[in-house]
Amino acid sequence: MKLLYDILRHRRPANSSGEKIFIKMYIDSVKGMQSDAFGNRFIEVGEGSTTMFSCHTDTVHKNDSIQEVIIDPVKEHLFTSGVLGADDGTGIWLMLKMIEYGVKGFYVFHREEEIGGNGSTYFAEHNQDKLRTMLRCIAFDRKGYDSIITEQMGVCCSNEFATQLAGRFNETYEGFLFRPDDTGLFTDSANYTHLIPECTNISVGYFNQHMPTEYQDTHFAARMLEAVLKIDWETLGVFKDVEEEYSYYNGYGGTAFDNYGATYKPANSAKGNIFGNEVFKDLYANKDLAFDRDLDALYNNVKEDDFESALDMIANDPELGTSLIFELYNDIKSF
Image (cartoon, rainbow, N blue to C red):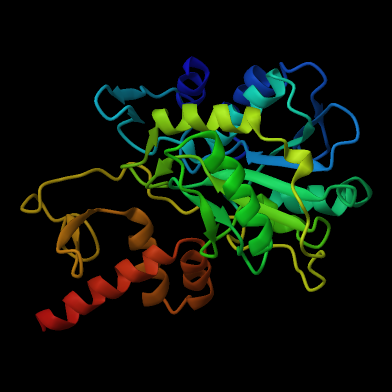
């Protein structure tokens, strides 16, 4: 678990010095690791594998630095004073450990996922012959405890495949309750659906990604590691063909959306956002939500009639759209 802790200490926004140093320290140090012209890293473990594993090296942090990572000794959760970066530090950790233990597969550490899936777009365009030999692409970049994603930017894997993979996970630990989940947004595996039949994204036990309340459940992460080392990935079935209609995803337009530095403050403290309050009210759950700078950015896009940017943000994080509706409803009631 020390390696996971060390990984999460590094804030690594796309193309920052911090990301480059991190890659050099933790990924390039793996014997046999290769790099393409875009900066994606990849390595093949064993021969003749038909399974690709995917994660990404960048985080949504605004600044690159070393941060203090704290563990809750009761809940076994890792967190920090801002965005933790388990998205996708936990995926990196899992893949590095799988490589260390010799799990057969084709491993790709993508660049620039958080600013548009640019690394996977490049990799898909320049490695089609290799990728067409893959039958399944498994990304470790999903929040929560139980998702085997079947849809992200369209159908990415079959329900049959997701059900089979969920069963493999659930067999390894009685506390697992993995299941097919069609509510995916985007990670790099979505950019391979025209080349690889079964592409998915799997929960790794982080929550509140891109927010100052992000945390990683270390107990779940440890059980995940045990599972990914046990599963026989090569025997997973293929139940669908590649997707013929496809376009590379570049939903962020090259810009990372910013909620860095957002902090909890008392509701009666000095007003500090575009809605004139310090917390947002979730009307249905009757609770306060932390101030989110992404929501400010979304509100400003709508105010300035920049609906294309607003829709891109909502496509990336539908919960932002829900939060905006709540706040606009509160504003209307106040008049």
